[in-house]
Length: 348
Image 1 (cartoon, one colour):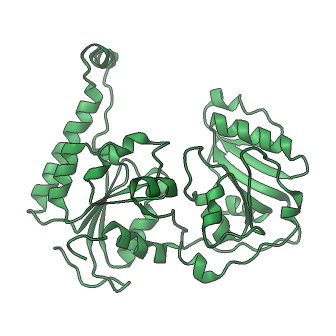
Image 2 (tube, helix red, strand yellow):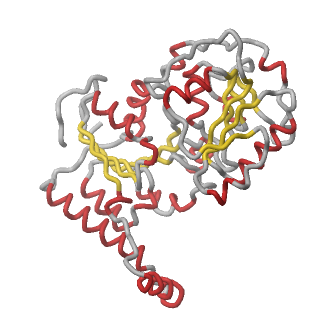
Image 3 (tube, rainbow, N blue to C red):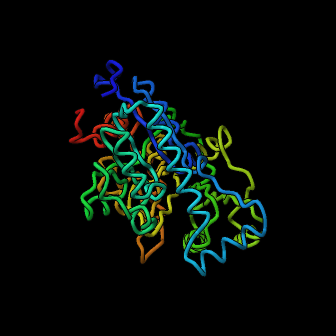
């Protein structure tokens, strides 16, 4: 076992490798930073970059098309398989047979059964972290039984497949926003374009004429932009972030959370509403199962009735006990994260 003394949480420090397809939007960066702050040696591997495939000519693209459809061989996938295999072989050689204490695979479809065998030789514990549900990303489940531990943010999958339940995290930097003398809007949301979600937003706005919405859609494609026609929805071609984002949230009574129809876990919007101390309007009824749920703060939209009770916005935000909020903040969440990923492993 590779050991590096004690972490700040009191648990032995570990040598950890996290494997993702891509660190999209930097969602894994705060986790890695917190692990390092706690004394764990942590490495991020982005398989999507290591095995990135680019067509070099139209002829090569046509060749792969014919190969897939006539011979059943996807040259693009074979390239990725080969480069991932070679990278893991080099990684094992460079570590002189010394295993990582823990390897976490975020997108299990990036590693096939051969890669899993390689990773098991490289680790004392090989675990999978599922950020998406079976209903949304079924390809994640192809080799899921080969992992030592599986944690899933979706409570239905955790129950049905015997996974260990987890949640998304609340960044340590998110703090309660000041309460303005007068709110500019009732409900705020900024999100990337999705056809089904946009149609739902149109229906939600039209069904609640007394609710003041501040809805912004981020879309770069002109082709998609032309589909956004509702007068109460604005469009941006660059992400809204930093002080501009915080200002918009601060001027609204509630944050809107529209979940994927096949997901039941807590989105980041749910936890951000908790950290910013703003009310929440959500399509996820499973939020009622969590200790921070109160009717005063959270309105769950029914599947057969999308009307929001106007009175929901009249009462002030009910402050949640800080001991409950801290369970989701990265500093405490990471300790729980490691405990679940390494449960029953040899080095525990």
